[in-house]
Length: 62
Image (cartoon, rainbow, N blue to C red; front, side):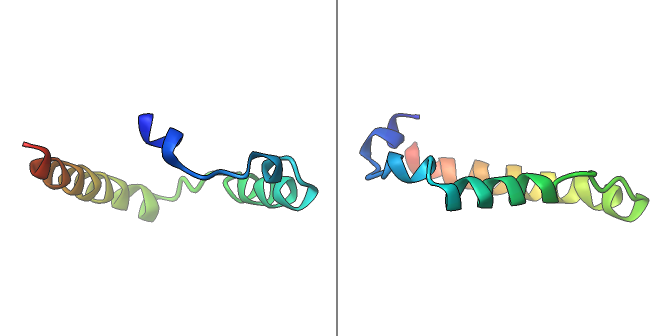
């Protein structure tokens, strides 16, 4: 969270019509969620891979 303070964000652009349109489109693409058996079978492996990468990335902080 502290890293956000170092970013050079252009906060005014978040409120721009184009940005709001893009955010709305992205949110709309998430619905309805994919609950097909094929996708749900892939979720545990993807979750495991993401956790493994996070764990490995944490090693350089030791």
